[in-house]
Length: 340
Image 1 (cartoon, rainbow, N blue to C red):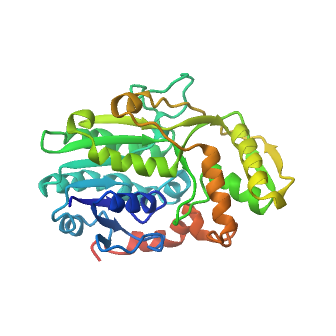
Image 2 (cartoon, rainbow, N blue to C red):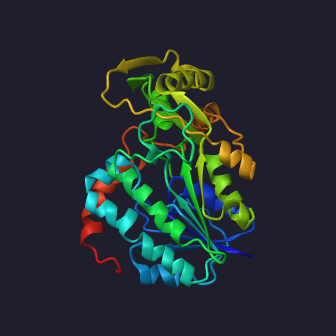
C-alpha cells in the first residue's frame, strides 16, 4: 500500500481528494494547520492526520516516513486572504517551499505534485492560454504561486518526479465548504437571497468541478513518470462569462428548488475586468484526462446539499469564507513559534 501525504488535506479541495485516495487503495497522511478544522475528513483506518505548520520543516520531515508521493495543496488561498498580511502569506506560500521540496527528496519521496493556479497568467487576449503562455500574475498570491513552479522543477530527476498543476476556479460541494468562489457564491445567493448580483459580467472565467479535480490528483499519482516528469498542466473545463454563470445558476436553482422562483439577476459596474480562457488540450492529449462533470452539475450538487441541511447559516457563518477565517487567525500565525 503506497502512502501519500497531502498538505492542506483538510481544506476545500483536500477533503474531496482524501476519500478518493483511500478508495483507490492508498494510505493517506493529511498534514494541515487546521485553520478551518478537520470536520470534513472521513474516519478511516488508513488515514493519519497531522495538525502542523508546513513552515515547521523538522515536523514536516518527520511526517514523511514511508511516504511515496506528496500532493501540496496547503497555502493561504485566494487574493483577499493573502492581502490581509502579505508577509504572512509569503512565509506560508513561498518562503518555506524550497525547504519543503528538499525535505521530500531527502526522505525518498518519489513524486511531488504542486497545486499552482491558472491565475498565474493574469490578463490575456489570447483565445487559448496554453502552458507556454507567458506568466503575468497580477496579485501577490498568484505571483508567489508562479515563483514556486521553477523551484520545484529544478528538483526534477529520475528518482524524484515533479509535476505542476494550474487548476481553473473550482466549484461544487465539499464537506469543508467555501462560499468565496464564483459559482458557489452565485448559487448561495440564488438559494438564500433569491437575488444574484454580478459585477461586470463580460469577464470570462475557466471553471472545474471539484470532483473532477480530485480525481485528477489521484490520476497524477498513477500515470507513468515519463508522461508527467517536469511537466506543467492546465486543468479546466468550461470557460464562461460571469453573466453566463449567473444565468446558469438561476436556471438550475429554479429547477432544483422551485420555491426560489423568481430569482433576480442584478448587474453592477466593476473595474475588475480580468478575463482569460485557459486551454486544457495538453492534459487531455498527454493523460487522456477529460472532465466528466459540468458547472450545472456543481450547482445541482450545491442545491442538494442545501436541501439536505449540510450548509447551515451559509450567508453568515465565517467558516465558509477564507478571508474572514484567516483574518481571525492571522495574529496567532504571526506570533506563534512555527515549531510549537
